[in-house]
Length: 93
Image (cartoon, rainbow, N blue to C red; front, side):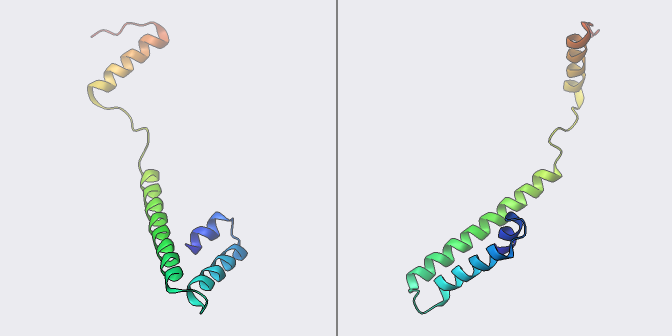
């Protein structure tokens, strides 16, 4: 979570320190009841898993070419249609 916050704020250590202090205040002090601790911790865990999942998904999408070259009969048909549209040439089939 803190790495995501640090990167998302452009490297702000102050934002990370404030978040960490507030988290400690809500979960580690005598003023925090067990319900507040449980809800805050559960929220942070869910958010952390969500961030990891989104990062893994983003890495997967970056590794896959979004526009792979066409293959097979569709590629031949697409190139013939492209010739027809661009130059008015009729491809011989």
